[in-house]
Image 1 (cartoon, rainbow, N blue to C red):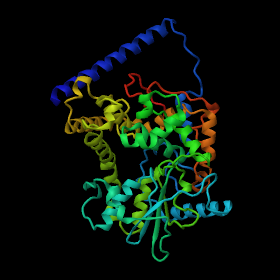
Image 2 (cartoon, rainbow, N blue to C red; image 1 turned 90 degrees about the horizontal axis):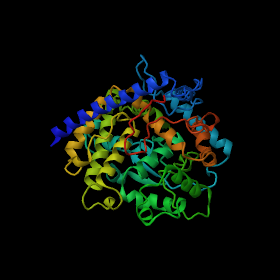
Image 3 (cartoon, one colour; image 1 turned 90 degrees about the vertical axis):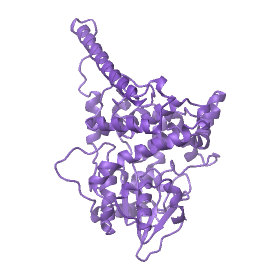
Image 4 (cartoon, rainbow, N blue to C red; image 1 turned 180 degrees about the vertical axis):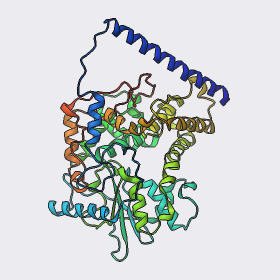
Length: 462
């Protein structure tokens, strides 16, 4: 069955290319004949503005007074190096200084949030969601079980369940010989990532637990199907609900560790963290920590480059075929199989694993008979083609820009207030230009990451 689908896909891609060329030719003819007015060139065009926004921040710099960008690093002839011990010490000192300045560990507006640390050998790891915690659980399990071979050659299954025996709640680590590790993340990007992972990506359990309360608060007049499913909560609605839960102490909202500000968790002002990694420098910081712990044998840059993206893509696809796409899945009460697969495809594109130009590969008539193996093959073929698209590194920033363009300025200002301690402790920029663009103008490209039915016009913004 797969061969005719692939042939149809090739013809479809060729047809789209010819269609695009025809449209461009028609537009060029109309402009040439003065039948379409041409706007004067804006010196701060969309591409220029966002390039400047990206350049305003440092990615991968050991200068922690320069907050990291949401953009990937430029290609450099210099090989990457694991983060130095001095850089980690600088970050720890910054946290100590910020804690001293605010005289206490309590976060503004809300009490500290319960957290869990994992204890393995002489390591204590605070498991902050949406900062690379899943990957670090693989590392901890690998170390504790004395596993051999490449780290990413093993199938860890449900790693959260496998590592539960390591967890200790709200406990100060021993002071003798223990190395305390934590990873943090740019607050606006972390909130956006949590929305994509927990609400946009189809998962019935998350919709019931997380999306239903958001729908009830942000869209009280929703239809019965929307109240029951809550599968289409928008990012703007989610942000409004999040603000309500964080700023209103009387709100009967169960706060969730995936969304709660980082500074509210892990007791940063009570625990002296030896290694504070940054999700924006995940590879360099992870290898830097492993080098300091004399475990450089576990992982290399090349292994991360070759396997990291595909490993996560495969895990996401397998999960959806094994759970959300089963005939007995409750998800079918809210979405069709096609919609589930399309959302999953978009989620992989938002991560930057697949090019935004890789349209959803299946016709509606091919959905019913599609197997896990067949869909994985299509995803891998799309991944191989995406390797030549350097712009895919910017997918996450583009999708974030699109999402925050839907959030009113007042709500974004409230987010900035909620994340104030995160900015102070970890050196992130409160007025990130992808969230607060110049003159608050969000000039969006034609492509839409949250429209599951592919746009045919795509333009790069970075």
